[in-house]
Length: 261
Image 1: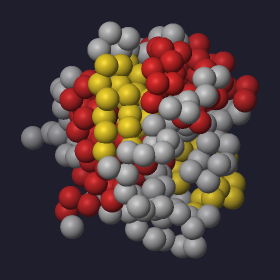
Image 2: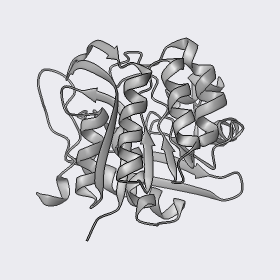
Image 3: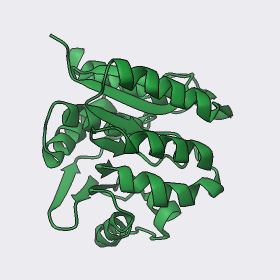
Image 4: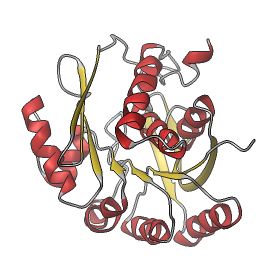
């Protein structure tokens, strides 16, 4: 039997902890068939991003059409879209695809390296976020997109309202950068779901955002409602963070295969 089909549209991480590599590992672990559209190639390791080269829009479009027109798709996840041209290209492709979309508006890497041109922010706001079933910004990305600085859980509501103002169905505001428990807020402007997990004393968290967004997309492809897909994804990523391991001389990745150990 063919498993649910999920497509990731994102950048490659040569170190294997984030990006396309994290997405495909997550999808395999969660029982869906992962497919990929590579938008950029990065030279990246545990210490940071040493270089990034975006692919031409034509190559991104061809990969997407190749997969969707022949194989089909039951959920799409977007990650690193470095330039306004790539954001616009992907938004056009999503507009013609009848499947839920998880938008991880990747702005900066775990090491603080910028992965999105400033000129692309407007395209993210006007074209990409309106296409999202769920948008999953972290607090840095919230500030980048909306200007809202989140210092407390109360601020997360303001952040969610600001993100929802750009048109996604649901906003998942990831509060991992706040002190205390790892708290996320999921809301569609009417329902509110607070997702709490104990904070693990583990600095090996490279790929957390990519992993969470891919796990949400996997849940949606299986037919789960958004709150259930997000709750299941949060549980999966919390376990992956707990099992994160050292790699190289810097920040290691979360363990995508933790349930199999």
